[in-house]
Image 1 (tube, one colour):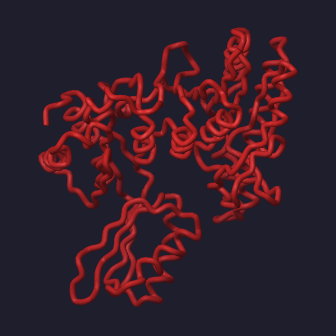
Image 2: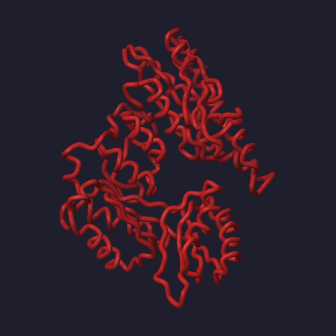
Amino acid sequence: MALIVQKYGGTSVGTVELIKHVAKRVVATKQQGNEVVVVVSAMAGETNRLLALAQQLSETPDERERDVLLASGEQASSSLLSLAIKDLGFRARSFLGHQVRIETDKAYGKARIKRIDSTRIKRALKDGEIVVVAGFQGVDEEDNITTLGRGGSDTSAVAMAAALNAKVCEIYTDVEGVFTTDPDICPKARKLIRISFEEMIEMASTGAKVLQIRSVELAKRLAVPVHVRSSFNEAEGTWVVEEDKGMDEVIVSGVTYDKDEAKITLLKVPDRPGLAAQIFSPIAEANIVVDMIIQNASEDGTTDLTFTVPKADYKKAMSLVEKTATAIRAEGVRVDSNIAKVSIVGVGMRTHAGVAAKMFQVLAREGINIEMISTSEIKISVVINEKQTEHAVRVLHETFIEKQGNL
């Protein structure tokens, strides 16, 4: 008997009929002789609806109360799925984050899981029940409700699989797996059968929406095999696993994009030790993630400093940066929210030269200006004008995926 953790996203449980369909799928897994733990997201659109209600009352809602509100979406879907499973004649029990003690830190809206007490879940499984857990949520050490950020149910599922030593964590969504790029932009995008944890982390961090980056980082650290597949058919999906020898033969595995970032520039920053820490410390304390950072060469004792943050956080970041700019006597602050980050990702970059040069040549040929560049061992990212995103993705996919190896 294997223990399987399944996660169903919002589009998979978006209506009563879809919840009934998921219940049948869960029951089928149980009937195959498996123990089953299901993690569910809120119904499609519910989190946005709740957030909009909060913003009607406050432009910047109190973070603690916002988490209390948003967590209710998963409470509803976990209860509804349990009801549907019971209606099929099987035993089921739903649990919220505090009931199974998914303990997190205190970073409201972006909390990280510290530990899970699996005692009640194991007891329910021993009693023959299918366990349904509300994803996306937990509690801090003072029992305040916390949420894990967009896509946080993925992380809930991976953490649950690790805590229970599950055979696999199946992530069910509205696509059949991880594709080489967004099929809506590039019809020639193809599904990957296998992808390494490292590649999936880079793809998630550069815009791929299939998995939340924290969930992949956690799966890699805890060695949890992840199977991304569609909840609407039985097709094999994409396995996210440890890198094997054959993976580095493929130079580029995917092309990703992210339109949810904004670029902030501090102008004429005095060039002296300690100012970078003074600029970024308040941003870090506000739990705002900084992505790309570029500092221009110093001229006349000053320098321009540019960095990117999530678009949802740029107003908060701007208010912090403006205070710092005044304190350090920078000339001013400029923001651009009409940008996009486009990236190519592949473990094969480690052993193949000329990838960056080829990427830059292709973009230059197409008249696409590069505003910022960031690289890692297996990734190259550029910031461009948002209007050119789709064109950039298509030409890079054609160059590196459809004509793989022609460097």
